[in-house]
Every structure is written in C-alpha cells, then in structure tokens.
Length: 299
Image (cartoon, rainbow, N blue to C red; front, top):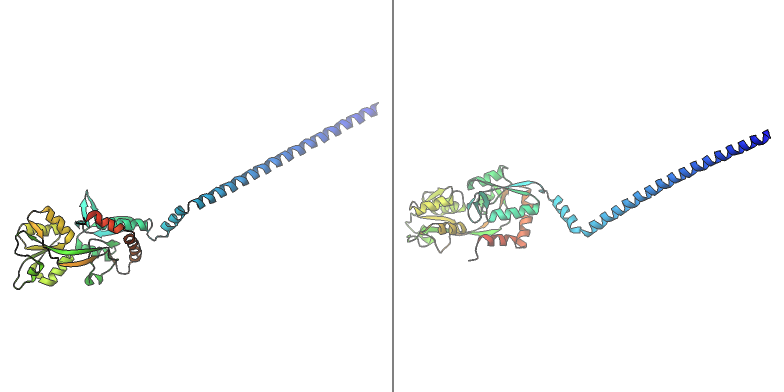
C-alpha cells in the first residue's frame, strides 16, 4: 500500500513537470511569433514609405530640377550690390524712398534668375565705376554708355538698351539744331551731368570752356530754365521728363548722338558671364522689352 502511494506521488510530480515545460515552450513560441510579426510590420512600413517617396519624386520632376538649378548657381543665396545714380529717369529714380526704374527692374530680374538678393546703392554717377573697381559694388547700372575710355577700367555686359543724347533749349532760343552749337563763332554754354557721356562728348566736341558740369541732370535743367546756360545735353528719356516738368523748355528735333547701355563690372569679374547669360535669356523671352515698355511709351 505504501509502495502504491509513492508511485502515485511520483506520477503526479512527473505530470506537473511536463505541464510546466509545455507552458514555457508555448510562451517562448508566442514571444518569437510576436517579435517576427513586429519586424515584418516595420519592414513593410519602411518599404511603403520608400515607395511613396519614389512616387512623389517621379511625380514632381520640375521641383527637383528647380532645386538643382538653384543650388547650381554660384550666387544662390548671396547678395549682389548694384551701384547706380538715381537721377536718370526712367532708368533710375527715387520713388517712395526706393530706387526704381528700368535698370532696377532688369537687375532684379537677373538676380531672381541667379537666385541672389539685389541691393541697390545710390551714389554720384562719377563714383559708380570707382565703387565697382574697388569691390564696393558687384556691378553698376545707370543708363551707362559703353565707351572705349570706360572699357579701360571695367568690363561691360551685353547691351540691353539704346539711348539717344539730345539737346534741351528754352523756347525761342537761337539754337535751332545741333549744328548751331558747332557753327563758326558759336559760344553757347552747354550744361551737362558730370561724368556722363553728355559731358564726355560735349567736352570733346566744344571744348572744356563751354561746358558747365552739374552733379544732377535736374540741376543742369534748372540752370537752363533760370537763363544761366544756353542748353543742356542729356539722354532723351530723362530729357522728356525734365521738359514735361518745366514750362518753357523744349527738345531739339535733331539728336546729338546715339549710344548703347550696359552694366559694368570689375575687370575679370566672375559675375560677368553669369550676368550675361541671365540677361540674354531675359532679352530672348521678352522680359527686358516688357520692362522698357513699362516705363517708356511707344509714342
């Protein structure tokens, strides 16, 4: 009887041990299954994310190209300083304490293409080339004419506009045409804006003694209106604005000289080629002409 009880107890212990082992195996299997399931879910999510990203890139090639183009510009994110003289409407003048006009708009369009920020520094016309060559400005735009003399100091961009120098006189003046200025015995006093091509050409043609220089074209016109000088030589577009603002003045029918306008850069500047590429593209797509038309009437 005693022997039977011992066998029964031993059997119960064996059953208990086997039961515990089975539970442990089931738990381990469950944990392994859960871990595998979690890893599979993570892998699937990563694949889905990668696929979505690839799909988005394929659907937006323009955005990718734009980012690439912007990062490809040597001037992206940089500030380019433009030196000008805001006394030359409609190319540059002050409006609401801001330099505006044809040159300002073209320069802004070029900087937009290069991904750069435009800063305009207003100064006397005669200081523009000095600022550029000294590195205080990246380029100059001020209705500046390309001349052989200036080419000795700076490089120029492509031409973006053509200017015409004209003569302003008082109504009833004895000066009827440009030829009267160079007639034998003529001694008319000519007003010009200092360091402009009007100054250069008039000095070469009529002599330094007959040329009176002013810091601003408006000052030369005021001197003419006051009878202190006999005429003013200046670009046609500013001339029209000055005559419209001053009674008793007129522009002679015959022009004095024609000239090409361009931006100037320090000799060997790396900006010149990129600036030209952007400018040429803006000329080709009609942007430059639309800017000029915005300020200058076809009539």
